[in-house]
Image (cartoon, rainbow, N blue to C red):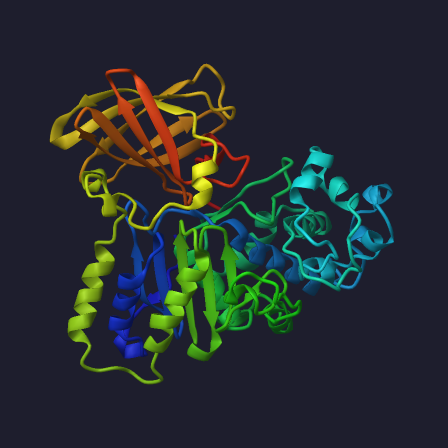
Length: 481
């Protein structure tokens, strides 16, 4: 059974409930969960329906910080050495090295995003050799000397993940489970692999909100959990320092320096993933703030944290906050994404706006073929698809939807995989609107079905990263470690 963090009163631990309410009021981005931890105790937590506390959530590049942690443990065990060249662990691929710079590239410089390249090499690496992307990466000579410039490079993390898995003889999750995850009481996780058996490292990890919070709390305690030092304190200190300058970042919290797969922030540091997956560690406040989201302006979320939550922390317990505490408890218990019955209200339909990239994303090849009414305001919706991740003999699936609430359907897929969807739908004149949330990811879509023509218009609200199909986001049925 998952071991939970202790829950406690926000006011008693110096967090003003009004500060959290103001934060929620001022948000202009779509959050899926929020957890605020201080002094090792959860003071505030909430999930926007249909998301919930037991669901894992794809955390995208927040995965990188777990990869760096696995590497740090391997260093402590003498299996990996920071100042050796990357090629020391990839000797079978040495003939792929493009030149002297890539040959000199060390594990340390790879960890701190200072490979010498000026841009991400992920796409080029995978196109150059789809069967062994490491060979493709080694074939791209850095533009500058390793260690000299910052460039956010997903293939760098992929390489760290690969050599860590090589030297340990285990996948990242298998290696981390007894050393990190089990001691933290984390018993649910999944990490996407490519090729088979090599977990990606740079993305693909799925965890619950509380599991992310425990990870942040471990780093806040400099790698110590109870009476066990799970990660060396010196490694934690180095990993979370500003090792590589990145003043060329486009927004303030992306200009504060980069460590071993951790970002420095204007306040504290963070593990950080696409669409606003955040684990903020605030040593001065003895606090950790976790958020999962579908944000298209991550800086806006951080600015709202700095504006409202940061000054909401006090050095002493607070009194006279009972009314705000009750209001906050009610607010956190009733959070929800807009349901279909709010679709007639244009502001509620897209309350957070729509990311520009969603306009250009390939439309999901999913179509409604019929809608049947049922009891208690529930609709049975039939859909068809032509997804390349699925065999042609399974071209359809059914789900249930309601206008005023989210209903979940699990689509069983070949290979012991499943896709968990939550749906809300209603008729708007002669058009049926269906909102679909992929509840183990940040992503959702909207479908408009016209029975008179049989046509469906399908659009991502938050589109997955390029190259990912709807059913490519499915997970194994069993996620227990």
